[in-house]
Picture: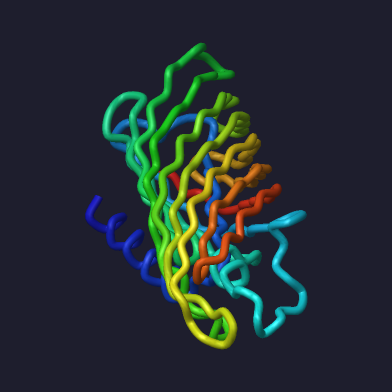
Length: 244
């Protein structure tokens, strides 16, 4: 287990160095929890695609708040995670996606054993990260938590399918540009929506793809001005998973 921990630590360091501004954090649930005393390592990417009122402004007026541009930007970021089965039907994990780090604890209730093994998977995942400066728009941080709930099916270890929902709450804070100067801003947001994914592979290696479609609503204050808004966001994710 020592060398797998070193590999995961190296991936974390690499992703932190490459991380962008987009708040793209996928679930990458898989069709089951990681088996007891086994380790899953994955490397891939994720994207955030804001829609409607959540879209990044195409042209920013110098007098307009830069909060949206800096704190909730769209884009693609690298992603990696590791999970370890601590007991039967329980695992612990750590994911790095861009500049956000998410820890998670998950439990599954097996509904049916056999070639097509099905289960319900629920988890609790606190996360946090920082918002690096983007074109001098300002910087800050974020903290939050997520509760995923999915129905997963594992077809003989070759094909996996999962379908469910993700709900989360988040708090963002920092100093962002408005009217030519950096001023304090904060925002509290909630997010809820369905998630669907699949994995295909042989023995220990699987390719995973996933899509979350969520509705977000944000309560934002920037330099005394309210910037409340809501809309839909798509979070696709992909990766290769190695089971040790």
